[in-house]
Every structure is written in C-alpha cells, then in structure tokens.
Image (tube, rainbow over all chains, first blue to last red; front, side, top):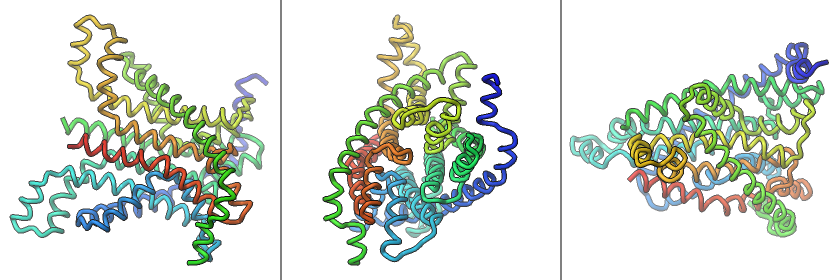
Length: 227
Length: 221
C-alpha cells in the first residue's frame, strides 16, 4: 500500500464513514441543541446582569463583579468537573447535559455581562440626560435609547466570545454527554481507526466555520463604521 | 449546609491533597512557559503572513486562522494525541499539548496582532519607509510597538484564555493542576481538591482578569 492509500485508509475509510455517519450526525444534533440553549440562556442572563448593574447599588454590584470575575478566570472544565462530581455527593442529581448547559451558560453570561456593560458605558452620558429630560423614564431610556446603541457596539466581541464558549460543548465528552467529540472518540475506540475522529473534526468545522466567517464580517463592518 | 461544606470545603482533605496539587501547579506553570511564547511567536508570524501583498499567501493564512478557530481546542488535542498515532505519529502528552495549542493559540493571537497592525495608520508605514527604514525596521520599531499598545487588552485577555486552556491537558493525562486535583478527588471521593485547584486558577488569573477590565476602560475613555 502506498502512502496515499494508507492515509485514506487511516482517516477516510469509506465503510467506516458509512457506518459511523448516523452516530456523528446524532452527536452533531446534540451539540447544536446544547449550543443553542447555551447561547439563549447565557446572553439573556448576561443582559439581565448588565441591566442590574446600571442601578449602581454598591453591594449588589460588588458581588456581581466578583462572581463575574470568578467565572471569567476559571477554566470551564474545572467548573464542569466541580458541578458534575460535587452535586451528586450532596444529594443533587442532574443529568450531565444539564451540567454542561448550566456551567457554560453561566460562563457566557459572565462574559456577556462584561461586554454589554462596556457597551452601556460607551453610550455618552448626554444620551441619558437628554432622554430623561424629554420625559423618558429610567427603563424607557435604557430600553429605547441606551441599549440599542450599546448592543450595536458589542455585537462583534459578543459573537466571538459566544463562538469560543459554544465550542466548549466538546467538554461534554469528559462527563459523557453524547455530543460530536464523544461519538467520535467512541467510534474511534470501537473501530480502531481514526476515521470517526476525522469525521467529528469535520463536523465541527462545518458547524463553526460559518460562525467564524460571520464574526469576521461583523468585525470589518464594525471597524468601517467606527472610522 | 454541613454536607455542602464537607463536600466542597473540607480543609483536612485539602491539606492532604496539597502536595499533589502543588506538583500539578508546577506542571501547569511549566506548560504556560511553553505554550504562551509559542503562541505569541506563531501568532505574530501568521499575522504577518496574513498581511503580505501576495494574495495566495494572505488567503492561506486567513483560511488557516479560521480553520483553527472553528475547531474546539479539545478536539484538536484529542486528534493530535490519539488520532495521529494511527498515522504513525506518536507524541508524548506534552508534545501533543504543545502542538495542538500552538495551532490553536497562534490563530487567536494572529487575529489580535492583525487588528493591531491594521489599527496603525498607513501614513506611519509611508513616513517610516520614506525616511529610509527597511520593511523589517519599519515593522520592528514603528508599526509593532504601536500595534501592540493598541491591542494590549486583547493580548492579555487572550493570554488568560491560554492559561485556562492548559487545564484541557488533564484529559490526555498530563499531570497538571486539574489532573492532580481530579486524581485526589477520585482517591478521597470528595470534591474539595478540585475547589483547591480552582482556588489556584483564581489566584493566577484573577489579577489578569482585573487588569483586562482596567485596560479596556482606559482605552475606551
């Protein structure tokens, strides 16, 4: 066998591709499901935290910033293991996909809060004052005047951060969530061949390249509009 | 409450796990000394390639950056560590981590450098070149210093991510901080060693996270 066909046989074996396509597809579906759940809950909770921070109640904000900092400084896999192994021992049993979902949502919420808060700060004070003096209430000002401007500035960094955190769904494999990587490594150890792993890697690329390209597009637009 | 404290903050168990966790911490620090410089250097190289005039090179660099940003680092690591042996390339855990994270981190650092270099006005290049500086000199003493200053918060924040990333090495049994803590956890059936490891990560990274926030605010104002 020459090198090329040995390479194909190791990473792209046709019968293994056929055999493992269903399980990789199922894993892809699981990854998409969990990723979407994380994006929705993470960003909404982050927005909620950023709004809470605008009230500027000192003790609340100190606690909020401390928690956000911890979530930003901690490797997600540490949090996953902590929750996954810790909670059952104190009588709380939650399924492993829920552990992944909760932990990554909290991490995303922390980063989203920081980014959105920076966006809110970047809206000039005059915008607040003008809106309030024309009779807008605090919430109306926040919702109709400040947030629309703040959110626009934060879209590119938020997209990139969201992408980075949803990629962490691969950590699910460590606690047995049947997502892409898990299906791929299982397939690899059953077949004794790297083809399922290659299929998994390809599934990730197909899934995330559009998001990377979209983030790049947003960044160029953002830069262009800022000049 | 009692059970919770005993499960997560059992100081006896933490004290017993400390020596093991400390050897893990040393491995993590060593790992950082390997992957951070590799990423910084590789990223700069890729960033420069993504800005050259030759279109083929530029596109190749950008495709590589996007590819490695789309693949989760854990997938890359497992592919390098347990997929490549099938092709006859068998790496030690340390070499696998170094290679996988070199590919991943270089792409992220490259994007940061790129944004920085592009933020330096065209006039700086023209002025430097017209005073007789070569391309290399212009880059080294005019463009890069300004570029790095402009993206300093992103460089630091990416470095925080790189340090966090080293914890993935535990998955391929490299005995770093998280791996040793998890080993202590499975020996004691208690989660406190992981809390201890979490404390060390916090100790290392919390100052940097604060620094990023301050740098970002200073640049915004």
